[in-house]
Length: 105
Image (cartoon, rainbow, N blue to C red):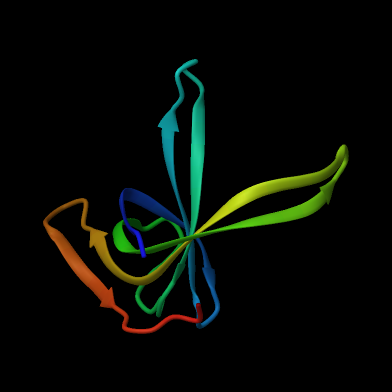
């Protein structure tokens, strides 16, 4: 299975007792800001929306879909399993928050 390293991710929301949604922002080739979104499956104790993190773990991607205003929308949902999550302390060094051994997937 492939591994993924995500730097400077922001916690967008907590998923009760299962994990959290995080995102990063980047500038595309046209100069527009874009968001990459991730679902991280782990114990989210000690995390709050807005926290800045470094995340590494096992990558899985699923094609998901929903009905939008202009028909069916398909997208790739990125999931991180068995992650190591490090909280970035803006006033000091990186500290490890969690190393979780299992995930729901």
